[in-house]
Image (cartoon, rainbow, N blue to C red; front, top):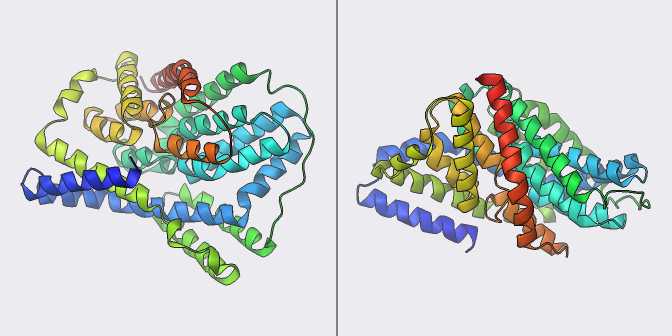
Length: 385
């Protein structure tokens, strides 16, 4: 089923709940007050990423990394991992999945390298590196007010050890699996063709200027919206035909709105109370592991966004919420639907003609996800308990 169709179904169910009085109008208004800025940020950062990619920012960055690697395959792979971390942290995991994936695959093929280690590194990093900043993942944006009162520094201070461990373990595990394919050297390739260098330079400048504002403490929708407007004006001047309504992630917006309404209806019914029994009380390492484990399992069974929304009320303090984020962010590495980023990534992999079976993906995830989540929880417990 298409994402937008599922979203419409959830919205329809929410409308029925509202009409029958199951979902009070005041609860729905409270949901809207909570999420409007998040949705605006999602739209703005998507437009920024799409237009920056169209201008060639990601292509040029990946090409520069290839030159820096000087023909060493392992170094190129590590540099691609570093680029994926940076894009995920500042532009979100969906940007890495949708826009960086085809660039990374093109770089691998241009250098006659096996694309699978590069493809898997991209999607694993998209998920595991999304613990770093509130803007890195939609689940973080939902949690940041409850974790640190909206303070970016407080969020980072709590979660950075777990984020570092999750990324390092991801890289180490993938290296162990693909070490033979990452040996040796490769031939260099021609740099990408840039049709409009003015557009490229201005787009890159806008993105670079945007990054520090996203972690400045200013509500992220404000600088992201200003950057989106600046890039839109640039493209209206240089290449207006590239501006289209499809730049706005309509399908994602419908899906997110439907999820929020559906979860609000379930909460009003009291249907979420039994979930609290799955999670032990307190902030001990065992309790944090329980929260993260249930979150990871729920994400792989359903999806990480509903998993977070359904379990949020049971994770009732900042440390427990951090453990839940570890589970729903770093844990969705087994099933294709565990995170929207994974589905988007796979569509780009298929479009690039790369063959990777879901069975192979799931087997690797079944090994990696428990180790990564466990390591991240231990890091969280070591710095908080």
